[in-house]
Image 1: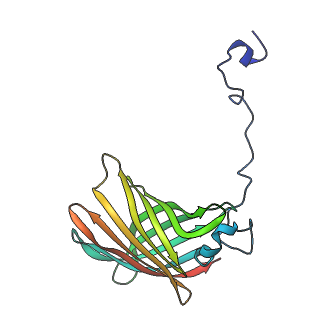
Image 2 (image 1 turned 30 degrees about the horizontal axis):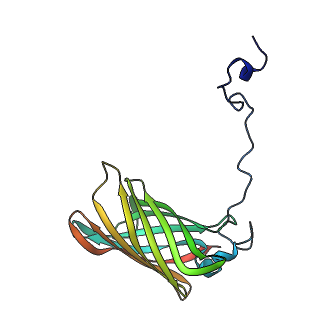
Image 3 (image 1 turned 45 degrees about the vertical axis):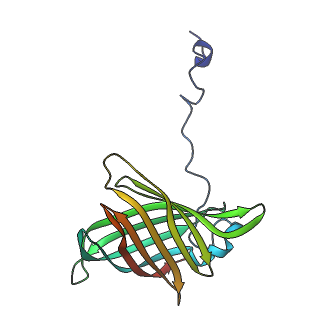
Length: 200
């Protein structure tokens, strides 16, 4: 038997019995004072980077209105995109947490025209209930307006067909409103919230 497994079986990859590697060696940061340098193409999105926490109201024609709390983390790793992560939880009438609610991850990426940054954005937003939305957006100052270009659903996901989102930084707070078309209903108000910066 050969001491080198790859000589005996050329299809066996050399990493199969390699030793473990160290933890991921590159920083990601929601705080511009530490971590990697912000990619120049993200300068227009700088006000969004941070950790945000606050309250909102949700509803849809098929469900009762509800109150929720939310935490959004927007970070970067020095490359030309932002990482977006959101966790929400339902609140009762006394503002006590009732249960976990929506979770979402995604990436925001500015559209380039050669070496020039445009005001257009692309965003991928994915939820664990089997829906992924491709958004095309436009930035105007500290306001971003997104609309779906495509919605991809798993076979077991609810029927979501379109969405629209408006984000803005207003007096230092992150405000947003989200509309959704689903289950035979046209674009309808779904979520809105005001979050304050808690880190970054």
